[in-house]
Image (cartoon, rainbow, N blue to C red; front, side):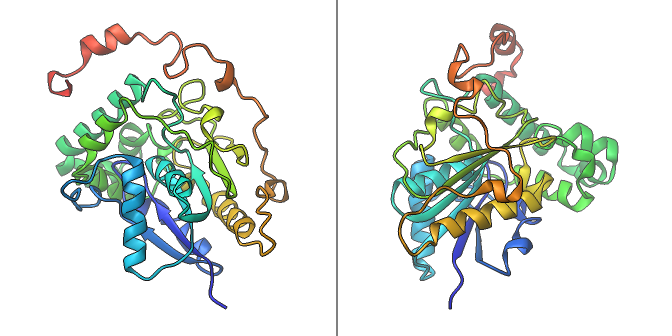
Length: 304
């Protein structure tokens, strides 16, 4: 009997190595297919391909079809989580595990602060490329360079840190994809397949109150919050993420067609309440109290 196929999708400025800690934990049960998104990992955006999650989702579907892959499940991180949910909206996947998915900031588009943080990280990766090996070997260097995406960057191995920096530096489609988020947001309320959403409680890039609005995900989704975890749960808590993926895939594989939400309680996960503070926070889409005028005044000229 063939194993279920799961496609692993990474975030903006990343590549398939973002799933390196989870991948081996899935292989015994699933046919794992990591995918490097167009415009990432040294791959250029195909001519004419809009840099939107919906377009990237169809591109992923075509890539898999070209490999002769039939029904799949999707697990995606950050931008990849958004793409995975767009695959579900298009009816291309049997389940979705969205790990710190981007896009849950509402109709106003991505928060300015998030865009500035990402552009600063990208600029640093380009400028500091010659220093990347040294930064990766140094505990202090990892803390300084990778604190945005990981709650405890000192726990990264030098190889993992170097891979993160290298992937960010070679992301050809970084600017186009990030610019797209200015006026785009995720609305996956029409998804009906089993869906699990997980965030770390120390996510600095997509924090609660700003980019974790529950109203953008399907009603069938189960929410999980992992303690002491930042924006990269797959790196920081690979065991928990792997179990979540396996449980969500199992829900999507049920033969009776009922496809219930994943039973996360079996693994000791604490689902978020029916209403989170993002549902009632004022200023949906921007951090409360953010000094945006100062951020705009201090931005480098080439950021636009």
